[in-house]
Each structure stands twice: as structure tokens, then as C-alpha cells.
Image 1: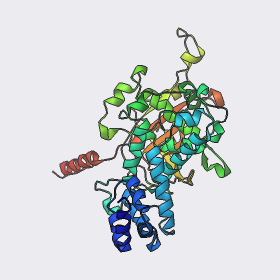
Image 2: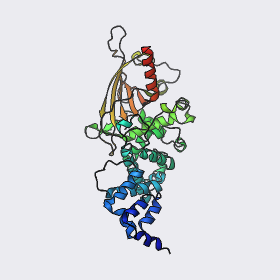
Image 3: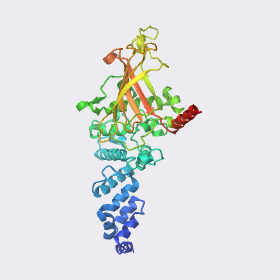
Length: 406
């Protein structure tokens, strides 16, 4: 009796078996159907692998390699579904010299990288103002909840085996950097409760190590970027620090860091119009002098809070990093003009340099006072910005225009 279903399917036309398979939701059931008989096998693998293309596109968004042979759809579908179903334990991959755990972690990272690249690929310019449900992004967020990818950012040295080089750190760092909105979020309790290597991150943030390297300085130091994200995570989402947590929690949801909303592409995209953020610096009186000592400070370098300033800057497109496109280099000068003569105040110049993450939603950079020290003695700090453009600001602009008309 157990063989009767196989004989029954064997008598059906291949096209009908193809159609039946398209209604099977479970991958496990699909594998069972695939192995029933030669007819079911040929129905799925025949017709130039068209079934696997349809299956892939029912679960994921259109890939960047659409012109390839349909065989790749089957291979990619199998790799993605296995990685998403079984996941990876990154704490084990980072802390043990176990080839099996490392292989699973690498597969998971490669799948996430490819899904990031393909996300929003089916969104057109006509959909820009409409709600668009990205299948890839929905799956990526589920991975963040179900697995520990973002829980182990710079884990303690005691957790890292001497063979950590088995894990491709650059790929790990870049995936974690692109998922920064989840790291800087109050929605993921598993990420909020884990915090490692803050002292080292703080040292990097206030240091002067190069941000860009490689040929023509086109390669981003991903550890530098991730250190900055880890620094801001420590202050923004840890209530125990009593620094930025309350202010960050009080923000409306639309005013918090968010994921990209269009397909990532290489090139320069115009910056948003509305931004929020924070900057940090260390007051020298706490570094070089006892609290009761006076400190001389150049009046030109005192921050002019509330005073209007001018800024001139550039956005330069960077090549894909680990095949993920959309990175930009940001450089900017902030300066003040005399109210009477409009001359530039050369004693108050501020330089900014940093990285715009793919999607243009988050900027991480380093600032410094041009006239105050060089090298390790340079007066500098860190800055984070995130775009908050949205319907609310569109409505505000429209209301302002209507008010002007009236």
C-alpha cells in the first residue's frame, strides 16, 4: 500500500505533478514528494528547472543573477533554506575550533549577505511612496530574533579560540554593520542584554586610526565602523549607563534608526533632509588634570551650541565591500561666519570624516577641531546620524506651504 501513491503519481502528466508540487509549503514534504518516483523527480527537475525558479521567487526576492541558468535557483534555494532552517550558533563558531560550527556560520553569513543584496529588488520607482513588504527583509529580521548573530559582537578574548581565523571576520563584521538598525534598537531583547568590549570600542572611537585603507583608500575598516556602533549601542540601549537611554527611548518609532527601504546600489545618493543623532567627546579636565585644577582652553574651540553654522561637504561613492554595494565616504567642514563681515572664523573649524552605511540611513564619523592638536593630542570625538525623513515631515512642509499661501 505504501507504494501505491508513487504509482499513482507516476501515471500523472509531468505538468500536473509540477502543479501539485507548487502547493506544497513544507520543504520537508517537498523532498518527500521529489523522491516518490521518477515522474515527480522529473516534474521538478525538468522544464529547465523552472519549478525551482518559481519556488525560489515565492520565498525570496529577485536575485541579481537573474540571467543565469535556472540550475542556480535550485542550488541557491537549497542553501538558503538549509541555512535559515538550521541556522548557526555564532558563539560556538567564534569560541571553538569546530569545523562543523564554522561551516554553518559561514553558510549563514553568505546567505544573509546575498539576501541583503537582493532585498527590495522588486520595488520599482513607482512604489517609492507606497508600502512595500520585502520578503528578504522580513526573513532577515526573523533571523535576528531566532539566532545569536548580533549577540556576540566582539566577545571577550576568553571566548575566542586561537583558531578564530577560521571565521571570516570581515564577512562577519560587514553583515553586523549593515544590520546596525537592529543593534541600535529596543525591540530585540536578546541583543540589548549582551554587551562586550566597550572599553576597547571606546578606545577606537576616540583614537585616530585610519578609517579607509587598501588601494586608493577605497576599503573601509569594518572593525572601526562596528566599534562605533558598539559604542553607541552601549550608551543608547543600556539603561544601566544612565547616559542616552532615556532620551533614545522617548523618541517616536519613526525617529529611531531604521533599515534601508530600497535596493542597495553602488553610487552616490542624495542625503536625506531630516536627521537625528548624537556626538561624544571626552573633556580634557578629566583626562589630564585633577577635578579642582583650572584648564586653559582655546576660546575658538569652545562649542557654540545654538549658533547657526555653515557646512560644506562631499559624498563619495565607494566600491562594494564584500560584494555588498551602497557605501559612501562622507567628508565635511563645519565653520562659522562673522555676522557683520561674513568672513570665516578661522579659529573655529571642525572637520568630519566617516562612512555612510548602505541605504543612506545611518552615518558614523569622527570629528576633530582643526586648530586644536594633532595625532593623539587632537581634540576629537565621534558622531552618529540617522535619517528620519518620512510622511510627518512631508505633512509639516505642506502645512507650512499652505500657511504661506493663506
